[in-house]
Length: 508
Image (cartoon, rainbow, N blue to C red; front, side, top):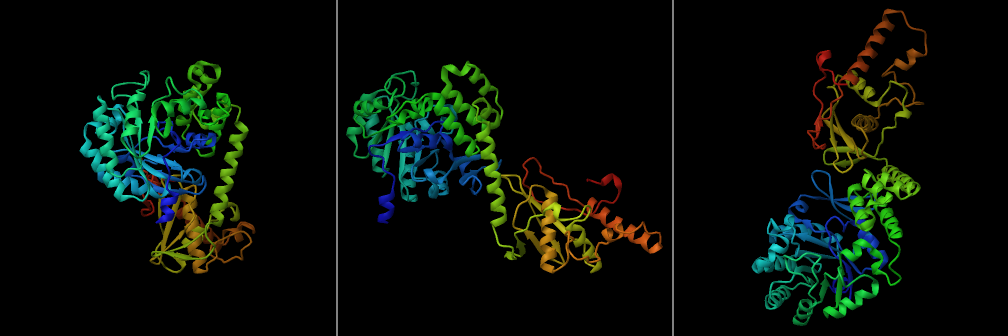
């Protein structure tokens, strides 16, 4: 559609944050945008790992997360960058490339294929710079992507041993329909210490009609913001992409820059805290910015840090860290209470309600599970069965209880397995209109422990049998707790077995 074409990301006359492994995570991308970068690339993400991810809307952080089966967030993005972020993937397979591109398509502005990384983890699977020697595969991947997604597709290459080969490859790439091509002006075997070949980039820019993005000038050409323009002229390209110059001090993107690196590190760290960035990733990026000061007292403190809290302390941002933590907790609480109205909703064959178990609302020793168990006994039904699952991204629990062959569950997630079971019991009790034992509730006579506690210790046979009966109730509810078997990956469903037969089997 016309709107789609008009809103498509342009690669002409832009300055971009280059894709950098371990550097291009969300905090660094947002920082670069703050300082004036037009486009930001994420770090190269490998298609095999991304293809296993689940897209999760993280309402607490207000992000979209792509979460791997082992709970790691492989890619995190937010609204602020949706129309500016380019998702770079490592791939050597057209079908897998398309599957990943479709997975992230709604959350990014463009897809880029890495064809320039000379590092082993990228090349060993035939990805990165290994693709340069297989133009047929390059063509197959790019064509599949261009026809398969609705957003721009680009790629990033290194130059080939001869100018003719380089131009011929880029012309072939252009024919696939990509929107732009980034050219790192070094050969596959050259390293950042080698000078960049501006003449190659210039020849490529003249040989094609799509925008060419020049990359590789951080060593000797781009030190300040005004140097970006010089690099653009020297390469004859319409756009420039910065890697190390931006990694060392992201304020290189602003005409007021460069700002003191201490200020830049502080701004970076604030984003890292706000978006719950992995502490080791935060640390890595700060150490890159510290450069030769990495052995200074601050550098040593950063290197010793194990958590974002430790890092905040090193930079005197404890208060900011604490406030952010409290804000996120408050947001989590508000989302829990407002996520659904307090009425039953069918989810497949399960009746659900938005219910949380609040321990303080019940007298000591009295729980909704006890009431449900006692009611089931009175009605001569089978004992309630609880099945609990654990959510991978935040380790929260949700339980489904089966009573009289009907299933009940709270739509909210709880911090522990026991609380999740209690919440499920409350849903069942409320739907069935049975008392649940809350403080201030009229006494139902279902569990009569409290009534008796208000009197002298009874001595009649009737009182003693009541006492034994309540003890049985307590015993059976305490001892039939299913243990959570996580099998190391923490989100296998757990069902509760029969109550243990003997004391040796108890798993309290």
